[in-house]
Image (cartoon, rainbow, N blue to C red; front, side, top):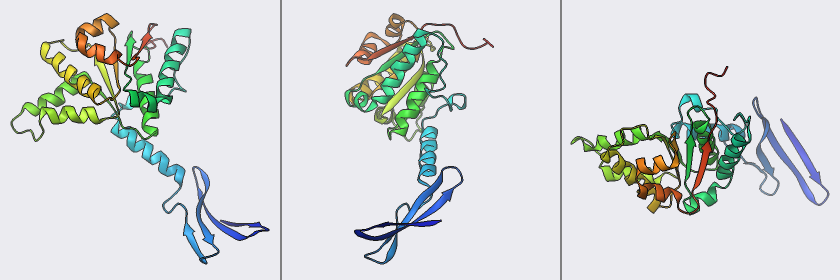
Length: 246
């Protein structure tokens, strides 16, 4: 559909709109009176649809499991003051991610199983990605497997190259910290990733069921100390599991 607007001091300006079934009318082009021609404002499709498509592409890049694909801050269940504190801390981190990214501020989400750590981590990733930053969620086992794959003689990547790729992501979320055997080789691998990101001033979020002292022991004091630098944030999830309550 088309419409025109007039101003007593200017020539009438014609605008052409198209209808989007999902988002309603959007401005397609404007008629330039001086050049006597239509000029495109948004040449390809509904802007809102394009933003939605871009977000879905970013979500796929985040490697978020299907179970957590729809997790957001708005649908996180709050039934206690502790849960509200955790929600506020994670939402604030996402809201201020530009500053968190500049300073390389890390976050530790730790607590009982089934308490929503992954839910809020994925909510952070969604919001961060919507702001244009890259994010990636992987388990520690996946990180270790990815690096060990470079040991194969037929691998086209070196261990250093893979670690560098992990360091380049704006936000890396490491899940299931503490679920592995805790061997010295695993500890070295995790330190290499955390240290590479630390040197690049890239924030890292880790998710664990362990106590803070146990996380430090598992990762090693040097790695855990890097997570704490620049006012690193610790969020406790000390409440009953949501799973199986219904």
